[in-house]
Image 1 (cartoon, rainbow, N blue to C red):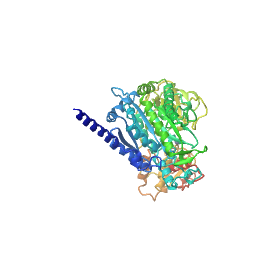
Image 2: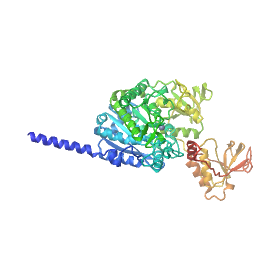
Image 3: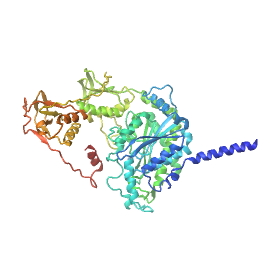
Image 4: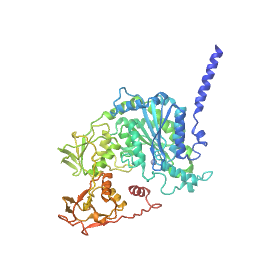
Length: 609
Ligand SMILES: [Zn+2]
């Protein structure tokens, strides 16, 4: 009998050994020691896929592609039982937010770790591999009640721009002298994405494909805790939560307190190692479009962690104090804070779930509805933004509304029409709506990290009323315009009152269609053409085959109305053949790029074109 037990114990031992050996560490998989060189993005994705293919605790999910066709992806890391019931955990979690309607509630914590949003703050993506490996080999106890969602790199194009450059210029062994070429990253640097947008300012505006695709999966999970891993100047200590004042007023006492608990948990590990850190300075929680505030305003604990490093640091650099900062140091610190975040969340699952639910249940808003009046182009543009954030809206019913008048900056009223938008805070994203729409955010401290003005009615140029009463509204599908072919008409006209009208103009010019604009008001064929209106004359465009069809297609594909002018003889204002109706030549525009130009401004112009 005794021998039989020994036999079973041996079998059990070898089985354990086998399963422990089954997953290769990042070092084994990559073939070099983590931190001894930078890992290109595709290898990072390969490692995440490899682990998912070989572990019951990990599931890989791609969620999109970058402008340069790199894979955007997350892994879900949790116990085997949780991984097999991810969808029901997700639905139960969103039931707490009033978004889903599931029977039974989850007791699991949802932690989302986002790495390397700024491409040249590159240690965190290296840390993501070690964090994943450590979670599934040494910290499986955390995973019993916690689902960890890891995005190894939010900005792969920026990261590889940095890493590929660095790999080209680094010496072997690396040169830790800060004047060496490998510490002087050239213009435009790896911080921003392909179009040189700062993705840590893009969470709300979602102008970039990385953000647009990420928000879809982020909104499916709305985690309890979200970490945005960064790097700062080489001479700084590590920064972690709690954040600095000002805190936006939608942030609850619990969210503040839990930031402190998280910070204290990190401090335990940092103290033990003698690593320096600071908290409550510099990085506030106000402007809603960052990777810490946006997650906070949708009910989570959103945090920025900052390690010394960035585009200057390379594999190793001598700091001002004469000490060397290495990539190994940097990734070790980020791994430690990441694991500590999961640990503290796993110890507080019940409070996290209760407080998440409380955050969504609290509907004590001063303003219950925001009513916005603007032209169709502005309205469509705002609706596209609301859809990205899964914010519900409706149309007004023609009555008058009173409240805060944005234009007058005082109490006022506005007669509504059925084209006016109504966005009410009486919905799950109420607090996000308040932060985006309220006329002025309250601040406890006027010194903030950077951006201080974003209120959407002002930013989009609407006439608007913030009402303290809920304003009734009706839902209906987006208005679409369908223009028909009108052969033999003398001219077509398009409006010119929104940035989206410039897309129509560009589309016409690109098809070699000759276009004019009026420098005076015109009344012709029952149409009022304000100054600036676009006029397309048939007589100018004899060279265009299928002219009418092209005009109709251009109007429809841009969802813009085109009107018909039957004659060149105007009822008032200049006739269409007048020199006041002037041709717009197709412009050739040069934009200067490179050293001594602002990379963000250049990228914005390039993206606009
Ligand atoms: Zn950063």
